[in-house]
Image (cartoon, rainbow, N blue to C red; front, side, top):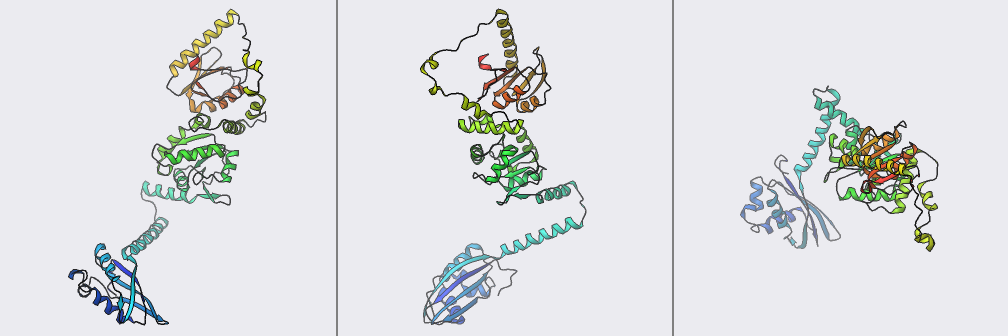
Length: 432
C-alpha cells in the first residue's frame, strides 16, 4: 500500500460476481474498463505511477459458484477527484467471463482518524501535566478548579437524573433543563441544580419540588418557555428565572447567571402570562404557602370550597347589595388622609419595582426591591404597619402580612388573592 504519510482517503468498495473470479481478474478489469473513461488526468495507471494512488488491495472469496469480496484504493487526490475515481468503479459490469457488480461502501478520511488520535493523546498529555506540574498562572488554577467542579456532578434516583452534589441536603434547589446546564452552574460554584431533561418532567423531580423551595431557571427561548409551562402544570415551583433572550443557561458566564437568579420573580406573578388555570393556581399557592410557613391551618383550596360559586347563590342573594357601614366624620377624614399618603408613596415608586415599609405614623422604615419583599417581611420584628409597593399583591404577600400584623397593603395591581383576611386593608393603585 502507498505510504500512509501521503494518503488522504481510502476508497472502500464491495464486489459481487456470478462466477468464480480471482484477484488478478479484478485488478485487470479495474484498470482496463476505467481507462479513458474519466480523462487522462485520472487514468489509474498514470496515477499509480505518479504515486497519487497506492496499491489496490483486493480480497475475494468464492462459494457455490459465486464470488464476493472487497476493494480498497488509497488516494492522495483531493476530495472531488477521489469521489470521481470512486464512482468510475461502479461502471464495471463484467470481470473476466462473469457478470459483476461493484458498489462504493464508503470513502474513509484517513486524517480524521489521525485527528482523533491527536486529540486523545493531547488529553492524556494535558492530564499528566496537571498531575505532575504546579500551576504557573491564575488561568491554569481556574481551569483546574472548574474541572474539579465538573467532576462533582452526580445523579438522582433510578432515572439517573443529573444534579449537583447539594441538591438532596439543600432547602432550595434550582431546576434547569439539561446536564449541560447543571455542569455550567457547577463551574461557577452553584451545586444545588437538577435537570428535568426537557418538557417531560421526571416524577422524582416533581417529588423534590414538593419539599423544597424551587427556582425554575430556563433558557431565554421558546423551549425554555415551554418547560416553565410544563413545570407549572405538574410541579410545585416557587420562583421563575430566565436566561437573557436567545441565550441558553449552559452558555452563560458567572455574571449573567447571578443576574438572572437575582431577577427571579415569584411564581404567582407569572400566572397570567403562562395562562395557568385557576385550579392549578390554588394548588401551587397551597404548596408554596406550606413550604414557606410550615403551618397546618386550612389551605387556600379549603377556603375556596367554603365560598359558594355565584351560580349557587339564590336569585335574591345575587341582586341584593351588601349593607354599607356608616362612617363617623372623624374616621372618614383619617382614611382619606391615609389614602393621600399612600397615593404620594405610589406616585414616587411608580416604575421603580420597589417597596416601602411604613410604621404606624406612615413614616418610611426601609425601601427594598419588590423581589425581596417577601423575605423582608418575614424578617420584620412587628414595627411595620403598612406596605406600599410597585408590584402585584399576591396570596403569598397577603399571608405573610397577616402573620406579621400588617394592616395596609397597597400595590400596583391586585393578583389572584383567594383568602383575604379582614384585618388587612388592600388596594391597587388604580383605585387610590
